[in-house]
Image 1: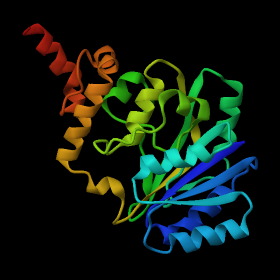
Image 2: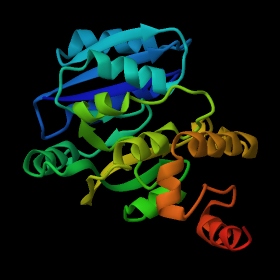
Image 3: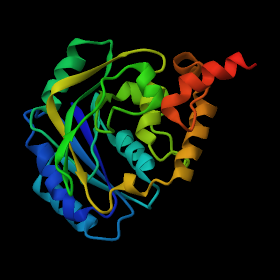
Image 4: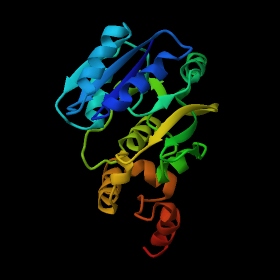
Length: 251
């Protein structure tokens, strides 16, 4: 069993398309859990109607608390061995889940499986994601939130961090999950479609919020950054190793 967690905040006009993309999957042993994060649009009506039409779909409402709380709420309800978090405005390809589960079933050392991705909506082009290495993950996130992983690993790391200082909570989640080892597989197929539109959450990230996030990451994952970057993650992230090298020399 795989559980798809769909946080939804005022994306009622996208929600049905997202759910139908999941239901079009070639993998049938799954449930779909919609977590309405305090929406004020048609999300409730759409979600409840989808529950009536499809037995695999369930709907829960919570007061607005953000995507990490919504994802954790959904995973707590999940009965699946595997978890896929899919935002209510994004889509997946039909074979993505099946191909990812094959890897997770056969390779216990693999913790995370994702695939090639494309952007669509106001921008239509391939999403050029770097190949995963721990050192690259220390500088930036190349694993989108809709990668597939085991629920037991979510439990092990304490779920998605709900601290408001995090604006890319998926990045911190992968750091928590992978900093003590484990393999990551990127499938050579397009598995994920990331919708770009005027209300895309990443568009609202300010420099100040990113700086607060870096402070949080250094506070809670100092050992990881020391191992991968020779010291803390810097505000000029790609220069962190160089800055830390010269900072050591001046000590």
